[in-house]
Amino acid sequence: RTVLPADSSRRSPRAARGVLEVPGGWWRLVVALAVVVALGALALRSWRRRSAIAVARGPDPAAVATDAFAHAERLGLLEAGEPGRFALTHVDVMRRYLAARFPEAAPSRTGREVAAALVGADFPILPERVADLLLRSEPIAFARAPVSPERARVMADEARAIVRDVEQAWQSRQVAASKRPRKRRR
Image (cartoon, rainbow, N blue to C red; front, top):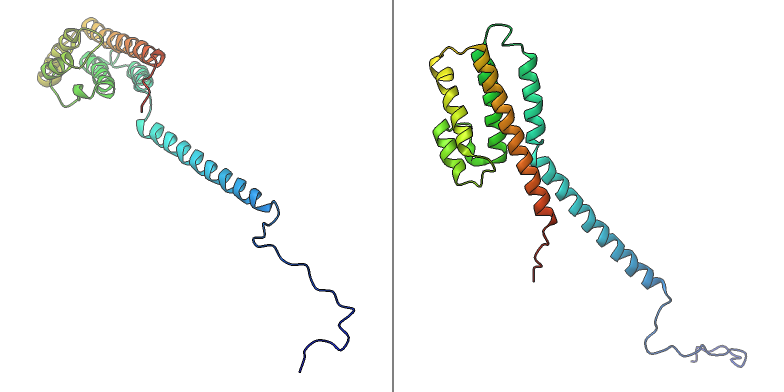
């Protein structure tokens, strides 16, 4: 028995389908959206990595040293009759700054060890200058040697001058390094 209607003359067949039917332009929009999402994800990942590196570096050692020197002055150790502590506080700030800029100058090392380590570390000023200050501070730190307020002030000023000179040299090296053309990687 036939499944056609009794009168099939009024019906017209559908048009033949193509071999491969290409849909409209909506697929282009999907591809463009996928590319934008991928680029956004890469940019977000790069931004997070850079901010994580900046956080990992910590605060600027020069700013920390400047704040610590100001704090040491505000303590009023010279006025309180503690010139040894005044000098040692400034020397300690200098040592921490040097250790932040040059890991070879770790605070756990003695004055002689720091001087020897800084000789081969491309240190921007004379390492003997640092060694001299550290060697002058060791008797005060370890043997409680007496120190006059004038000598304590000179030692504190020398510690500040060393930090200032090293930081100026450090900044000029950073500027020079940023101006040098970088080599292309292949």
